[in-house]
Image (cartoon, rainbow, N blue to C red; front, side, top):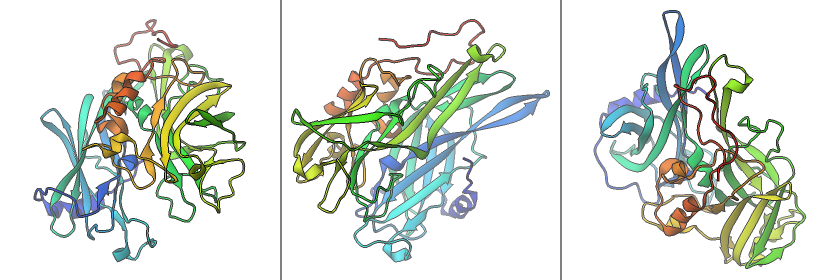
Length: 410
């Protein structure tokens, strides 16, 4: 997707560098779940051949709160070490009471920055890159650093075409979010509307059939089953989970070498999915065959199963009829999420019939594009990750006949 916001960015240039500020307006916070980064590759012609001219970043972000001033905006700064690679100013859209737009009583307001980019701010940098996100206050043009993300950019070659870059998504495998969906409220996520209240799950996966390991292998949308227990006691359900691809949350690139034949290509694909779990809540919900959250307080464990094999296990706590926050959400500098969205403890088996490109090295930077881990519980998830498949695409120097071993590594 190639969406320009340069008009809004130019309007914000009058702000200049802005003044430093210690904090956001009261009740306003940055939504880690909604932050997403995508690279746009650029090319140029040189001696009759297409060569890469670098990349620029496209960024989505949301701030949540009811006291965001009109004319506020966002800025992001890309850095590698002490070197600044790019600085981009972004327009934003408010959904709040004082704007008269899409406001619902009792629902927090939003400030959305979508498709923030500047194709003049290109770079050819690879490796670890930090992204500083600033809120620009519409009242006084002051700037507040609201979040620092850390991403990894890699480069790969293509036969008879320009090389390209991509953001490593391997670390997002632990950016799993469980949520309570209320049909009566505005859907601020890409969750499926079932016309019922339900518990849903967002997760990232590199499926084998999408990554060239087993093109005819199983995919998450077929025959997924969920088996849950509370405090070790199985909770019977008959509701079939619903699986959706999340819009605009996908990376899919392909490297090639030699002559570019079928066995000289490698595909890297990560995608975010949304799953309607067999769990509901509230007296008015009519989700058939689903367990009711409020009837089962305690320690939940749900297995996601494919062809009778467990592919993921999630763990969470229910008290007072609601899912409780993960310890990472309470830690200083930890994960920031809207109400009823929570980071969930996620575990993977050592082998999987569906998954590849699992590698804990990228996950050490933290969930939601490297916001860091701040608790023992979060770091325990990283240590528990197995290694499955090859983590990345082969680099530019890969020669024909040197294709690495595919398959699982233990």
